[in-house]
Image (cartoon, rainbow, N blue to C red):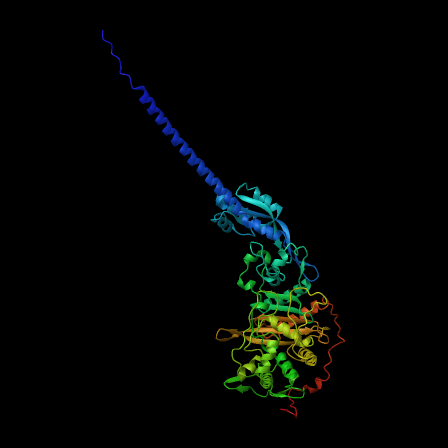
Length: 572
């Protein structure tokens, strides 16, 4: 019997091969595990980084705002405060639910924030973090939280609140997303408001919210009535340079600054420059008197016909008076012709010197960064001197003009304007521009303009208002737009002891049926000042008294009672 025996495999070689296969498989498995772990760690690390940096902006903002000081008006009323609030935000890249459905639900809960399309845009942003609502109420937070979307997050953080909404928005300004001042006094005071050493005490502005509200109300009413493009208003303390009210329309809400456009953000009173027309005529008369060019009210200037200088003709807007006018009558009847003749005798050097003393060649002197540079003539020809005398060919801001009128009536001292409350005994010394005697004469003539001239509708019974109207065609590139004008009334009260300048300006007002189609300052800007003074006078401590007035008895005998009469001393 034959037995077959299988040939044995070499044991050592087989074992070695099996070990190698197992080792290789193990190594590959370990590599795969390491790669998977690495990927997991990378994802987790990325998420951690995103979590840290996505909140960095909010944390930085909170850090800045947490210690930001308050801003109050001159009487302590809050204008800007830092408060605790809820925020609703989302991590768009972490959303788990259907974005269209979530957007619809959010729009239903926050309709004032945006529609479904707006919320969908926020949820699909290519960012790791974005805000949906700030200063949210606890009730809203609860409702949004009930949606059950983990990518929507809530947090308590400090917020800048402007409790007066749009009031004095241009004076106050607003903050950037990182909590720093971007404009207005928020920008000017940024370091002071964020410095732990100084932020504990609120900063008092010169603004009086009561006066500000009255000015905004009256100017806004006039803008609507006359369909004006814009408007500016100022109330200025003539003795200290404090801005009691600063109004620029259209305005914006600093609580929702993102909804404002460039026109709303622009401060008309300090940034926009205008040719302010006949409001310059009192400055010309003051220059003539103060320099000794005209020393007598009996002296008259020919306004019988248009004045031709070279190829330029100067005429009076409401028809030629066809008479000779003295200084007071030139202002009462607002004669361009007589004003030009006075300026011609004053000369370019003295006119420029006066304008420079009033700061018309530089940006307005105030803390704000938002300031416009005046348009100063490059060459002072004879016609330049004549036309700038009645406010054409030179452009300044409304604040420039308000400060000039304060100088005319306060005894002749120019002081810088300020939006900070001035403590007693800390009023700037200022610089003398005209003599006290000239200033006294200007108070008389400005009062006569309201009593007998173009400023009649600017009167406020018992407050002895004095001022001058000005209407100029709107300057545009290459010339003037005859369909548009800038209407201004600059005034002060009470003229027997001036305390405040009140200025109102309307950009491109239209005539109405009530005004007979007239769109000049006498019909629109002057009434704004009259109504404003009637509302704010008592607030500012000026007691109305219709039994008092400034003494003009030495001027009235020189005025014509009958416009058809002509003086025997004409031309002298």
